[in-house]
Length: 394
Image (cartoon, rainbow, N blue to C red; front, side):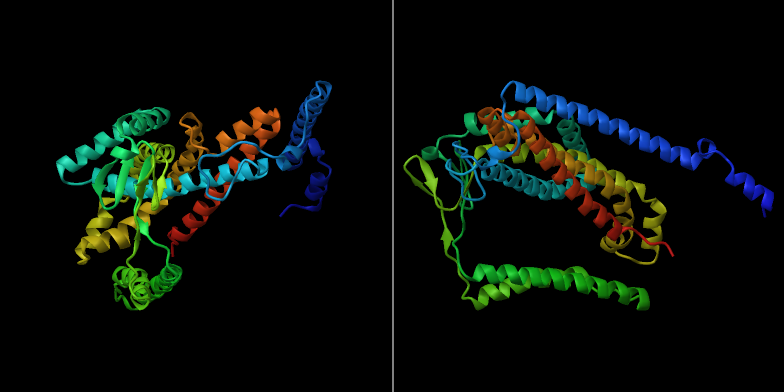
Protein backbone atom coordinates (compact mmCIF):
# COMPACT_ATOMS: atom_id res chain seq x y z
CA UNK A 1 0.00 0.00 0.00
CA UNK A 2 1.46 3.44 -0.88
CA UNK A 3 2.17 5.66 2.07
CA UNK A 4 1.07 9.25 2.56
CA UNK A 5 4.24 10.52 0.94
CA UNK A 6 3.61 8.43 -2.19
CA UNK A 7 0.03 9.69 -2.58
CA UNK A 8 1.09 13.31 -2.11
CA UNK A 9 3.80 12.83 -4.70
CA UNK A 10 1.23 11.43 -7.16
CA UNK A 11 -0.94 14.48 -6.65
CA UNK A 12 1.96 16.81 -7.44
CA UNK A 13 2.80 15.13 -10.78
CA UNK A 14 2.33 17.71 -13.60
CA UNK A 15 -0.55 16.91 -15.96
CA UNK A 16 1.81 16.70 -18.96
CA UNK A 17 3.52 13.75 -17.27
CA UNK A 18 0.24 11.95 -16.56
CA UNK A 19 -0.48 9.56 -19.49
CA UNK A 20 -4.27 9.70 -19.08
CA UNK A 21 -4.49 13.49 -18.88
CA UNK A 22 -2.00 13.86 -21.73
CA UNK A 23 -4.07 11.54 -23.92
CA UNK A 24 -7.22 13.58 -23.24
CA UNK A 25 -5.36 16.79 -24.07
CA UNK A 26 -4.11 15.39 -27.38
CA UNK A 27 -7.66 14.30 -28.30
CA UNK A 28 -9.05 17.76 -27.53
CA UNK A 29 -6.33 19.39 -29.62
CA UNK A 30 -6.97 16.97 -32.52
CA UNK A 31 -10.71 17.65 -32.47
CA UNK A 32 -10.06 21.38 -32.39
CA UNK A 33 -7.69 21.20 -35.37
CA UNK A 34 -10.16 19.12 -37.40
CA UNK A 35 -12.97 21.54 -36.49
CA UNK A 36 -10.90 24.55 -37.65
CA UNK A 37 -10.08 22.82 -40.95
CA UNK A 38 -13.75 21.99 -41.56
CA UNK A 39 -14.79 25.52 -40.69
CA UNK A 40 -12.20 27.00 -43.06
CA UNK A 41 -13.23 24.75 -45.94
CA UNK A 42 -16.95 25.38 -45.44
CA UNK A 43 -16.62 29.15 -45.07
CA UNK A 44 -14.29 29.36 -48.08
CA UNK A 45 -16.68 27.28 -50.17
CA UNK A 46 -19.73 29.37 -49.20
CA UNK A 47 -17.83 32.58 -49.94
CA UNK A 48 -16.80 31.40 -53.40
CA UNK A 49 -20.31 30.19 -54.21
CA UNK A 50 -21.82 33.53 -53.19
CA UNK A 51 -19.14 35.37 -55.16
CA UNK A 52 -20.16 33.50 -58.31
CA UNK A 53 -23.89 33.89 -57.56
CA UNK A 54 -24.43 30.12 -57.21
CA UNK A 55 -27.39 29.11 -55.07
CA UNK A 56 -26.71 27.16 -51.91
CA UNK A 57 -28.82 25.21 -49.44
CA UNK A 58 -31.45 22.51 -49.87
CA UNK A 59 -34.32 24.77 -50.92
CA UNK A 60 -34.24 23.20 -54.40
CA UNK A 61 -35.79 20.03 -52.94
CA UNK A 62 -39.18 21.78 -52.91
CA UNK A 63 -38.99 22.79 -56.58
CA UNK A 64 -40.58 20.89 -59.47
CA UNK A 65 -38.27 18.16 -60.79
CA UNK A 66 -39.51 18.34 -64.42
CA UNK A 67 -38.01 15.00 -65.42
CA UNK A 68 -39.46 11.52 -65.65
CA UNK A 69 -38.18 8.37 -63.97
CA UNK A 70 -38.67 5.18 -65.92
CA UNK A 71 -39.12 2.89 -62.92
CA UNK A 72 -40.69 3.77 -59.59
CA UNK A 73 -41.89 1.91 -56.51
CA UNK A 74 -44.27 4.76 -55.59
CA UNK A 75 -46.35 7.02 -57.88
CA UNK A 76 -44.22 9.71 -59.50
CA UNK A 77 -44.52 12.25 -62.31
CA UNK A 78 -42.42 15.09 -63.66
CA UNK A 79 -44.64 17.54 -61.77
CA UNK A 80 -43.40 16.21 -58.42
CA UNK A 81 -40.60 17.81 -56.43
CA UNK A 82 -36.91 16.96 -56.41
CA UNK A 83 -37.40 15.55 -52.91
CA UNK A 84 -39.88 12.97 -54.20
CA UNK A 85 -37.63 12.17 -57.15
CA UNK A 86 -34.74 11.46 -54.79
CA UNK A 87 -37.06 9.36 -52.62
CA UNK A 88 -37.94 7.30 -55.71
CA UNK A 89 -34.25 6.77 -56.39
CA UNK A 90 -33.60 5.72 -52.80
CA UNK A 91 -36.49 3.23 -52.87
CA UNK A 92 -35.21 1.79 -56.16
CA UNK A 93 -31.81 1.29 -54.54
CA UNK A 94 -33.41 -0.39 -51.52
CA UNK A 95 -35.46 -2.65 -53.80
CA UNK A 96 -32.54 -3.97 -55.84
CA UNK A 97 -30.33 -4.22 -52.73
CA UNK A 98 -32.88 -6.16 -50.67
CA UNK A 99 -33.77 -8.60 -53.44
CA UNK A 100 -30.10 -8.96 -54.35
CA UNK A 101 -29.02 -9.68 -50.77
CA UNK A 102 -31.68 -12.38 -50.30
CA UNK A 103 -30.79 -14.17 -53.56
CA UNK A 104 -27.06 -13.73 -52.94
CA UNK A 105 -27.25 -15.31 -49.49
CA UNK A 106 -29.14 -18.32 -50.83
CA UNK A 107 -26.95 -18.81 -53.91
CA UNK A 108 -23.69 -18.12 -52.07
CA UNK A 109 -24.56 -20.59 -49.29
CA UNK A 110 -25.40 -23.34 -51.79
CA UNK A 111 -22.20 -22.78 -53.77
CA UNK A 112 -20.10 -22.57 -50.61
CA UNK A 113 -21.44 -25.89 -49.33
CA UNK A 114 -21.04 -27.43 -52.81
CA UNK A 115 -17.41 -26.27 -52.80
CA UNK A 116 -16.83 -28.74 -49.94
CA UNK A 117 -18.77 -31.58 -51.57
CA UNK A 118 -17.16 -35.01 -51.77
CA UNK A 119 -18.38 -35.18 -55.36
CA UNK A 120 -15.39 -34.14 -57.50
CA UNK A 121 -17.48 -32.67 -60.32
CA UNK A 122 -19.70 -30.58 -58.02
CA UNK A 123 -16.69 -29.26 -56.10
CA UNK A 124 -14.79 -28.38 -59.31
CA UNK A 125 -17.75 -26.62 -60.90
CA UNK A 126 -18.25 -24.57 -57.74
CA UNK A 127 -14.56 -23.64 -57.66
CA UNK A 128 -14.66 -22.58 -61.33
CA UNK A 129 -17.75 -20.43 -60.69
CA UNK A 130 -16.07 -18.71 -57.75
CA UNK A 131 -12.83 -18.01 -59.60
CA UNK A 132 -14.49 -16.72 -62.76
CA UNK A 133 -17.03 -14.47 -61.03
CA UNK A 134 -14.50 -12.99 -58.62
CA UNK A 135 -12.04 -12.18 -61.43
CA UNK A 136 -14.58 -10.40 -63.66
CA UNK A 137 -15.19 -6.74 -62.65
CA UNK A 138 -18.75 -6.14 -61.53
CA UNK A 139 -19.18 -3.21 -63.95
CA UNK A 140 -18.20 -5.46 -66.86
CA UNK A 141 -20.79 -8.02 -65.75
CA UNK A 142 -23.51 -5.37 -65.56
CA UNK A 143 -22.75 -4.16 -69.09
CA UNK A 144 -22.63 -7.76 -70.35
CA UNK A 145 -26.05 -8.68 -69.00
CA UNK A 146 -27.51 -5.38 -70.18
CA UNK A 147 -26.23 -6.12 -73.68
CA UNK A 148 -27.71 -9.63 -73.48
CA UNK A 149 -31.18 -8.21 -72.81
CA UNK A 150 -31.05 -5.55 -75.50
CA UNK A 151 -29.07 -7.29 -78.23
CA UNK A 152 -29.83 -11.00 -77.86
CA UNK A 153 -33.47 -11.07 -76.81
CA UNK A 154 -36.21 -10.45 -79.42
CA UNK A 155 -38.88 -7.76 -79.46
CA UNK A 156 -42.11 -8.23 -77.46
CA UNK A 157 -43.96 -9.52 -80.54
CA UNK A 158 -41.44 -12.38 -80.79
CA UNK A 159 -40.88 -12.84 -77.06
CA UNK A 160 -39.40 -16.11 -75.83
CA UNK A 161 -41.73 -18.27 -73.77
CA UNK A 162 -39.83 -20.79 -71.61
CA UNK A 163 -43.07 -21.73 -69.82
CA UNK A 164 -44.63 -21.08 -66.41
CA UNK A 165 -46.19 -17.85 -67.71
CA UNK A 166 -42.83 -16.11 -68.23
CA UNK A 167 -42.02 -14.03 -71.33
CA UNK A 168 -38.51 -12.82 -72.21
CA UNK A 169 -37.93 -9.88 -74.53
CA UNK A 170 -35.79 -6.77 -74.86
CA UNK A 171 -38.39 -4.81 -72.87
CA UNK A 172 -37.75 -6.97 -69.82
CA UNK A 173 -39.24 -10.08 -68.24
CA UNK A 174 -43.02 -10.47 -67.85
CA UNK A 175 -44.27 -12.82 -65.13
CA UNK A 176 -47.70 -14.31 -64.50
CA UNK A 177 -48.86 -13.47 -60.97
CA UNK A 178 -52.00 -14.27 -58.96
CA UNK A 179 -54.78 -11.77 -59.49
CA UNK A 180 -55.46 -9.47 -56.55
CA UNK A 181 -57.78 -11.06 -53.99
CA UNK A 182 -58.73 -10.11 -50.38
CA UNK A 183 -57.49 -13.51 -49.22
CA UNK A 184 -53.90 -12.60 -50.04
CA UNK A 185 -53.71 -10.12 -47.16
CA UNK A 186 -54.90 -12.74 -44.68
CA UNK A 187 -52.50 -15.28 -46.16
CA UNK A 188 -49.66 -12.86 -45.53
CA UNK A 189 -50.81 -12.32 -41.95
CA UNK A 190 -50.99 -16.07 -41.48
CA UNK A 191 -47.45 -16.35 -42.81
CA UNK A 192 -46.26 -13.77 -40.27
CA UNK A 193 -48.10 -15.63 -37.50
CA UNK A 194 -46.33 -18.83 -38.56
CA UNK A 195 -42.95 -17.08 -38.39
CA UNK A 196 -43.67 -15.74 -34.90
CA UNK A 197 -44.87 -19.15 -33.71
CA UNK A 198 -41.74 -20.73 -35.18
CA UNK A 199 -39.55 -18.36 -33.17
CA UNK A 200 -41.20 -19.28 -29.87
CA UNK A 201 -41.17 -22.98 -30.71
CA UNK A 202 -37.43 -22.84 -31.41
CA UNK A 203 -36.83 -21.13 -28.05
CA UNK A 204 -38.97 -23.70 -26.22
CA UNK A 205 -37.34 -26.65 -28.01
CA UNK A 206 -33.86 -25.35 -27.18
CA UNK A 207 -34.64 -25.03 -23.46
CA UNK A 208 -36.37 -28.42 -23.47
CA UNK A 209 -33.37 -30.10 -25.06
CA UNK A 210 -30.97 -28.47 -22.58
CA UNK A 211 -33.03 -29.77 -19.65
CA UNK A 212 -34.06 -33.23 -20.86
CA UNK A 213 -31.80 -33.99 -23.83
CA UNK A 214 -34.85 -34.80 -25.96
CA UNK A 215 -34.83 -33.49 -29.54
CA UNK A 216 -37.90 -31.81 -30.98
CA UNK A 217 -38.40 -31.76 -34.80
CA UNK A 218 -38.32 -27.97 -35.05
CA UNK A 219 -37.69 -27.83 -38.78
CA UNK A 220 -40.65 -29.96 -39.78
CA UNK A 221 -43.02 -28.26 -37.35
CA UNK A 222 -41.82 -24.81 -38.44
CA UNK A 223 -42.25 -25.70 -42.10
CA UNK A 224 -45.75 -26.97 -41.41
CA UNK A 225 -46.68 -23.72 -39.62
CA UNK A 226 -45.11 -21.33 -42.14
CA UNK A 227 -46.63 -23.08 -45.15
CA UNK A 228 -49.67 -24.70 -43.56
CA UNK A 229 -51.29 -21.61 -42.07
CA UNK A 230 -51.35 -19.60 -45.35
CA UNK A 231 -52.54 -22.72 -47.16
CA UNK A 232 -55.38 -23.16 -44.68
CA UNK A 233 -56.42 -19.51 -45.15
CA UNK A 234 -56.29 -19.99 -48.92
CA UNK A 235 -58.57 -23.05 -48.71
CA UNK A 236 -61.01 -21.30 -46.36
CA UNK A 237 -61.21 -18.35 -48.79
CA UNK A 238 -62.34 -20.71 -51.55
CA UNK A 239 -58.93 -21.48 -53.06
CA UNK A 240 -58.77 -18.52 -55.48
CA UNK A 241 -56.83 -19.65 -58.57
CA UNK A 242 -57.36 -16.79 -61.01
CA UNK A 243 -54.08 -15.56 -62.47
CA UNK A 244 -53.08 -12.23 -63.99
CA UNK A 245 -51.40 -13.31 -67.23
CA UNK A 246 -49.32 -10.78 -69.22
CA UNK A 247 -50.73 -10.15 -72.70
CA UNK A 248 -49.19 -8.47 -75.71
CA UNK A 249 -51.01 -5.20 -76.36
CA UNK A 250 -49.52 -3.07 -79.10
CA UNK A 251 -45.75 -3.05 -78.73
CA UNK A 252 -45.48 -4.22 -75.12
CA UNK A 253 -46.97 -6.54 -72.50
CA UNK A 254 -49.76 -5.51 -70.17
CA UNK A 255 -50.89 -7.32 -67.06
CA UNK A 256 -48.86 -9.58 -64.82
CA UNK A 257 -45.58 -8.25 -63.48
CA UNK A 258 -43.00 -6.81 -65.86
CA UNK A 259 -39.44 -6.23 -64.70
CA UNK A 260 -37.29 -3.84 -66.71
CA UNK A 261 -34.11 -5.07 -68.44
CA UNK A 262 -32.08 -2.51 -66.47
CA UNK A 263 -33.28 -3.97 -63.17
CA UNK A 264 -32.69 -7.55 -64.32
CA UNK A 265 -29.19 -6.78 -65.63
CA UNK A 266 -28.27 -4.98 -62.40
CA UNK A 267 -29.71 -7.72 -60.20
CA UNK A 268 -28.07 -10.60 -62.10
CA UNK A 269 -24.69 -8.87 -62.22
CA UNK A 270 -24.66 -7.99 -58.53
CA UNK A 271 -25.88 -11.42 -57.44
CA UNK A 272 -23.42 -13.42 -59.54
CA UNK A 273 -20.49 -11.25 -58.50
CA UNK A 274 -21.23 -11.02 -54.77
CA UNK A 275 -22.38 -14.65 -54.36
CA UNK A 276 -18.88 -15.81 -55.33
CA UNK A 277 -17.43 -13.95 -52.35
CA UNK A 278 -20.24 -15.13 -50.06
CA UNK A 279 -19.51 -18.72 -51.12
CA UNK A 280 -15.90 -18.35 -50.00
CA UNK A 281 -17.05 -16.88 -46.68
CA UNK A 282 -19.38 -19.85 -46.10
CA UNK A 283 -16.68 -22.34 -47.09
CA UNK A 284 -14.14 -20.74 -44.75
CA UNK A 285 -16.64 -20.65 -41.89
CA UNK A 286 -17.47 -24.35 -42.22
CA UNK A 287 -13.81 -25.33 -42.51
CA UNK A 288 -13.00 -23.24 -39.42
CA UNK A 289 -14.88 -25.80 -37.31
CA UNK A 290 -12.48 -28.58 -36.38
CA UNK A 291 -13.08 -32.09 -37.67
CA UNK A 292 -13.14 -33.32 -34.10
CA UNK A 293 -16.46 -31.54 -33.56
CA UNK A 294 -18.05 -33.41 -36.45
CA UNK A 295 -16.54 -36.73 -35.40
CA UNK A 296 -17.68 -36.27 -31.80
CA UNK A 297 -21.22 -35.47 -32.92
CA UNK A 298 -21.37 -38.51 -35.21
CA UNK A 299 -19.94 -40.73 -32.48
CA UNK A 300 -23.00 -40.11 -30.30
CA UNK A 301 -25.35 -41.07 -33.13
CA UNK A 302 -26.45 -37.72 -34.54
CA UNK A 303 -27.66 -37.77 -38.13
CA UNK A 304 -25.70 -35.66 -40.69
CA UNK A 305 -28.49 -33.05 -40.84
CA UNK A 306 -28.45 -32.68 -37.04
CA UNK A 307 -24.65 -32.49 -37.04
CA UNK A 308 -24.82 -29.60 -39.50
CA UNK A 309 -27.69 -27.83 -37.72
CA UNK A 310 -26.66 -28.33 -34.09
CA UNK A 311 -22.86 -28.53 -34.18
CA UNK A 312 -21.30 -27.13 -37.35
CA UNK A 313 -23.45 -24.09 -38.23
CA UNK A 314 -23.70 -22.56 -34.72
CA UNK A 315 -19.89 -22.50 -34.53
CA UNK A 316 -19.39 -21.53 -38.18
CA UNK A 317 -21.70 -18.52 -37.90
CA UNK A 318 -19.24 -16.82 -35.55
CA UNK A 319 -16.76 -16.81 -38.43
CA UNK A 320 -19.27 -16.23 -41.25
CA UNK A 321 -21.33 -13.26 -40.01
CA UNK A 322 -18.64 -10.50 -39.79
CA UNK A 323 -17.26 -10.91 -43.36
CA UNK A 324 -20.79 -11.58 -44.61
CA UNK A 325 -21.75 -8.12 -43.36
CA UNK A 326 -18.99 -6.64 -45.49
CA UNK A 327 -20.28 -8.44 -48.61
CA UNK A 328 -23.82 -7.20 -48.01
CA UNK A 329 -22.49 -3.65 -47.76
CA UNK A 330 -20.49 -4.17 -50.96
CA UNK A 331 -23.59 -5.25 -52.83
CA UNK A 332 -25.53 -2.19 -51.66
CA UNK A 333 -22.72 0.19 -52.58
CA UNK A 334 -22.04 -1.53 -55.92
CA UNK A 335 -25.65 -0.86 -56.87
CA UNK A 336 -24.53 2.72 -57.53
CA UNK A 337 -22.98 1.38 -60.76
CA UNK A 338 -26.56 1.21 -62.06
CA UNK A 339 -25.96 4.61 -63.62
CA UNK A 340 -23.87 2.85 -66.30
CA UNK A 341 -26.87 0.86 -67.59
CA UNK A 342 -29.62 3.41 -67.03
CA UNK A 343 -31.34 2.02 -63.95
CA UNK A 344 -32.78 4.96 -61.94
CA UNK A 345 -31.15 4.30 -58.57
CA UNK A 346 -30.39 7.08 -56.08
CA UNK A 347 -27.04 8.04 -57.65
CA UNK A 348 -28.60 8.28 -61.11
CA UNK A 349 -31.48 10.47 -59.91
CA UNK A 350 -29.10 12.60 -57.82
CA UNK A 351 -26.84 13.14 -60.84
CA UNK A 352 -29.83 14.31 -62.90
CA UNK A 353 -30.80 16.65 -60.08
CA UNK A 354 -27.28 18.07 -59.91
CA UNK A 355 -27.20 18.66 -63.67
CA UNK A 356 -30.50 20.56 -63.58
CA UNK A 357 -29.96 22.61 -60.42
CA UNK A 358 -26.19 23.06 -60.50
CA UNK A 359 -25.98 22.39 -56.75
CA UNK A 360 -23.38 19.68 -56.84
CA UNK A 361 -22.18 20.04 -53.25
CA UNK A 362 -25.64 19.46 -51.83
CA UNK A 363 -26.25 16.60 -54.27
CA UNK A 364 -23.02 14.81 -53.40
CA UNK A 365 -23.72 15.39 -49.69
CA UNK A 366 -27.12 13.72 -50.09
CA UNK A 367 -25.54 10.74 -51.86
CA UNK A 368 -23.00 10.36 -49.06
CA UNK A 369 -25.68 10.69 -46.36
CA UNK A 370 -28.04 8.16 -47.97
CA UNK A 371 -25.37 5.50 -48.46
CA UNK A 372 -24.08 6.15 -44.95
CA UNK A 373 -27.57 5.44 -43.61
CA UNK A 374 -27.80 2.26 -45.71
CA UNK A 375 -24.41 1.06 -44.47
CA UNK A 376 -25.01 1.88 -40.80
CA UNK A 377 -28.47 0.24 -40.86
CA UNK A 378 -27.09 -2.95 -42.40
CA UNK A 379 -24.18 -3.02 -39.96
CA UNK A 380 -26.46 -2.46 -36.97
CA UNK A 381 -28.77 -5.30 -38.00
CA UNK A 382 -25.89 -7.72 -38.65
CA UNK A 383 -24.20 -6.79 -35.36
CA UNK A 384 -27.47 -7.51 -33.55
CA UNK A 385 -27.76 -10.84 -35.36
CA UNK A 386 -24.13 -11.66 -34.60
CA UNK A 387 -24.82 -11.20 -30.88
CA UNK A 388 -27.91 -13.39 -31.17
CA UNK A 389 -26.02 -16.32 -32.71
CA UNK A 390 -22.89 -15.93 -30.58
CA UNK A 391 -22.10 -18.96 -28.44
CA UNK A 392 -22.17 -18.19 -24.73
CA UNK A 393 -19.48 -20.13 -22.88
CA UNK A 394 -20.37 -21.58 -19.53
